[in-house]
Length: 124
Image (tube, rainbow, N blue to C red):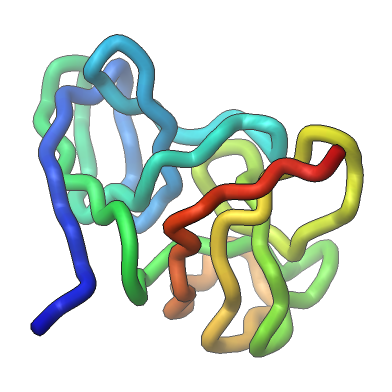
């Protein structure tokens, strides 16, 4: 039995595969930063607005991270960043904790496995 849940949505603009997306009005877009509430991970790329994107909502997912500024270590909590990437979580008002790193990264645009949280928490 799998704990993975995927649904498809139209994109509002181009979205790269394995990027975090947020949703509004029934469509998805890449997350814009740490205070953007993430919805899931794009399992395919969208070239333009209206293209269908399969979104993984929970479970273990392959995601694009940016470990070049602050290294991502195994077990780190992660938060959304610009362009739908994930970065190591920094405690600040409004920052979302959305996943836990299952692999490490010290480079930009690395793809690692993460455990997506099914309950999102924003710092207060």
